[in-house]
Image (tube, rainbow, N blue to C red; front, side, top):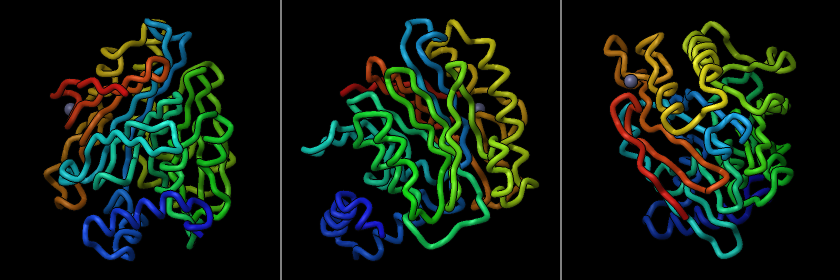
Length: 290
Ligand SMILES: [Zn+2]
């Protein structure tokens, strides 16, 4: 199924297996487990040019996973001959989880826990395929393959300021459009159409707190949004330790802890990527360009 839907990425995995000396079956299994462990729980913000200080389109994201995964992630600049090329945050150097391509298409994602998971295309493949597309129509199609086994909430945006939150489960999705030119998303289904696919709402309290808090804080920044505004919102500690800026909860087993291992801000208009390694409350954002 994966090979049929996106043969190019399967070739990349074959090359990765050959180069690293790992068996292809192992590399593919790692693709299915992406990005490892219990999955991600993140906070995303997006705003089009009407709301930003420099009239550029921005998308921002905190990546919340198991703390040790900070050693598995790198900033990768990838330029295949038949694609625009992208700057991505790639686990193991090859599995992008977030990225901006040279055509001004970005993808960031929030883990969801749907109750209709099945055998099918792993949720990491759409992320990679979105990053090869040059238009929003193609990118949205790439975000929701019909034979998928699971799905992230893929936030797919372009430099025109088209911003979509693609809330998927394995069998259906809703395309939430940023009607007013901005949106916030965390880790539970917002669309009433998708509520019945939420596996267990009782595990979503951090997501609820982060969503409402991020929305409220971001509203205050609208009209003057810039890198500093994103840093302010993404460093917030209300709901600590499971806050927007997440810190490991020492009361939990290390495997169950969650931490914001990086924070990113994409400028889709000028094609600039800002990356902060570790918690945004402590670090600073470094600039990457094509
Ligand atoms: Zn913090």
